[in-house]
Image 1 (cartoon, helix red, strand yellow):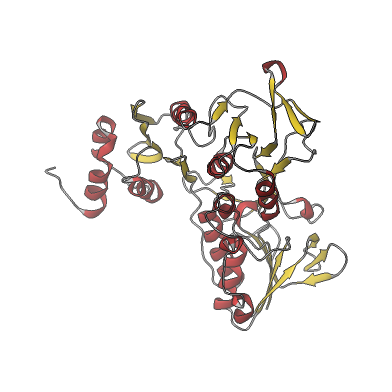
Image 2 (cartoon, one colour):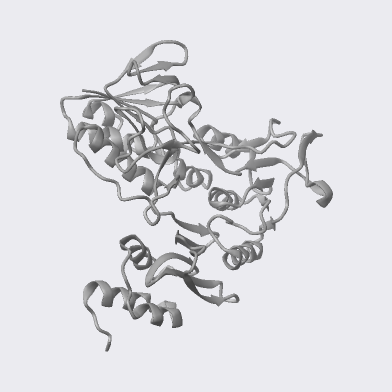
Length: 417
């Protein structure tokens, strides 16, 4: 059996390793689109903050790791896929045939259509090469605008702050982390960042960028502008699916997959940030671009490719973030559900916030800021869809009693009840 994995991120690497363990006789080819050893994009901010060296971003550190496993690592871009011929066409010529194919091509940085985004000094922060450019262009006191205060943007924020730059964050939505936090949480993180010396402009959009006397003049339209040395764009990502045009592989935002990570084409699977698959709580097809999902996708897709039928239960939206020392987390349907209930406890001055969302007597979503204790328990209750019974009413009165609820409902504890 000839297995081909396209994409050398966490999903692709774990899939290749799983294929090798599951089918020792098969051939495994791992195709990476960058001229780098397979690495984790989530490690790039630690590189920018000088917490690690470049090899610290690598997914596997032994130089002979892939060779020792019999995994053929190839660097190159796939131009197109032909399911009928079971083959890939490579940029620059040549084809690769397969019996089973995994598409694990991840995402690419998305830039807004703003004049001047192609100027020198305007950088993404998505690849190792991007990180090298930012590191070369910034030092203590450098004036930097960070476009975007979403999850990726806030990770980059942490790295830039560690470099000692004079940082301004520009977010077009009305709060930081708009897809991870409600207004109470997003506003709290904004106040925290401003107290740490970071300027945050929400409900503000970059209208244009011009180069003048070696600096970048960034305009906010009617809201003025400012002069900086570097602009870092972290306004989002989009799945790498362009090379699938004309293949007949069904895509919406990403590659559509079923509960076995299979596409609509026989022998072809998808995993990681490019895969639009079942969500745990609703079954709807969604993309959850987080490393835990990518890793599990890669493992389960590989098992199915190798003939070991394995059902994927669905991904859960979950993010944990440290923003200049303030830890925040969000899980599942934190925004609530139709007919559901929610409870919030806010300590604005202490930068602490806890919110639980319920559907019937099951927790389906949660937000937490400044609270690290028991967030794993909350996530577990959501993932297992544990019925809380009368403990739902107790949590509506005091959501901090979540550990008690967990022990009673899953471990048979009583706490006097």
